[in-house]
Length: 166
Image 1 (cartoon, rainbow, N blue to C red):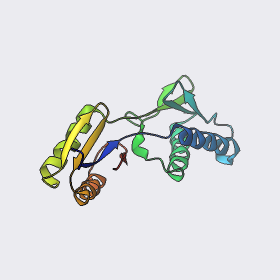
Image 2 (image 1 turned 180 degrees about the vertical axis):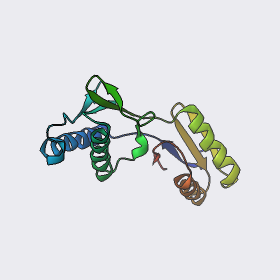
Image 3 (image 1 turned 90 degrees about the horizontal axis):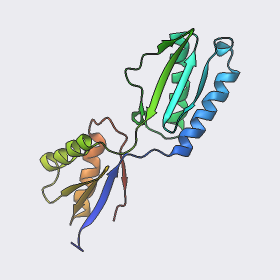
């Protein structure tokens, strides 16, 4: 096993970057003219939830758009933000939209990725699910590069990163 090269497929979010994006979005919402008088705001709710509030559904969607723009600028995939059905819910006189940060590969996503690598990847590559990440190993580094390219093209509902490449 000493001759094998490997890497891990993970789905992690840089919490500090998300916090910076949220603070920038909150600042922009407080300053923009089209958000004046509609009670628009965005804030953390607990550890992994972001709550967007405004007086109408359209304004909540606009707050979401501002937040998504800030996330993309900071290099965070929008796949890391789970909005449920994506529709703002009425709550008294205001509308709310709650987004949750997704971290870690779910077991079904990890199994799906492992099956994809087994079925379409190079034959010398081995996969192993380890908690909320997937370890991919092979004797050939070129095969590992091919697997990374394959996984980048895959349609997965998680933001993938490739770490511990050795």
